[in-house]
Amino acid sequence: MEQGRRLAREAVERALSLNPNLAEVYAQMGRLEITVDYDWAGANASYQRAVELEPGNPVGVRLAALSAAELGRFDEALQLAVEPLTWIRSMQRVGTTLERSSFTWGT
Image 1: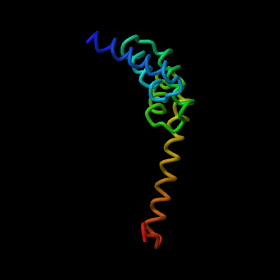
Image 2: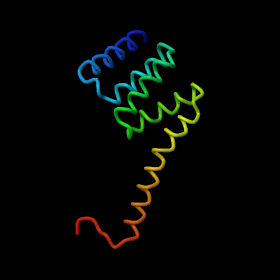
Image 3: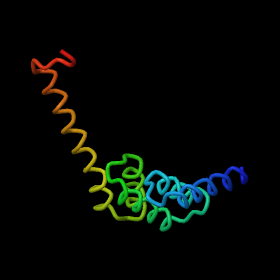
Image 4: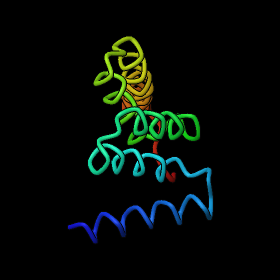
């Protein structure tokens, strides 16, 4: 198990060295910081960086919201959780509108 953790950390660190602007890698780093290091503050910083880099990434947003809640920052957690829901609701409305319209794909 220790070897797996070491390999996971090496992979994340290597990915960040190749491209320090990958939101998903910061999300994975945060997971390692929580599950291996028990470093909630470090994980939170990684999740925040993931959201900064890619605000629409559901993995980063979800993990940042959970981390904020765990750290007692409930307003921040709620704000992070609500923004994607707003987007999802608007996309559902678009889908409903398209279904009700006479629009047809490819014709």
